Image (cartoon, rainbow, N blue to C red; front, top):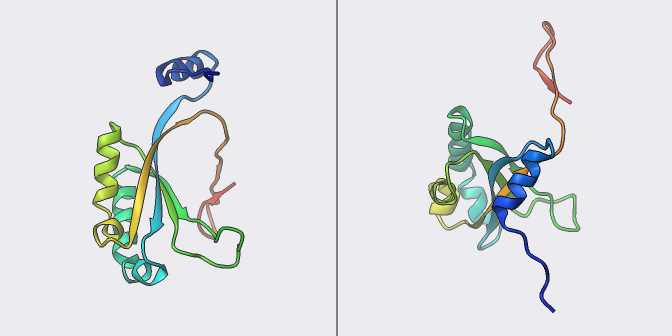
Length: 133
């Protein structure tokens, strides 16, 4: 028995007509290829690249994953969310990451439709940095 399918454009249209955000972004899942050692060796240039992309407005979000089943360890995995024109453009951004150039990690790019959620920023005029709540 064939399972029903839905075209991506139809899902986007559904989201738009049902007052959902319908923001298309690209998620990159980045996984170590040979343990944590090569990841740590490339961490500084990777963070510099990520920060550059953030300042350019390309990086929507990024960060590491805690170990699978072991929340006390980091095994070198991460995820990045790009604002990109296309799947190909997002792939090129991921390919240019020093972590991937060095072969310390491999990656997979997925198109993602951000529909629901909330985001708030609390800004204090004195005493420090903005607080994301």
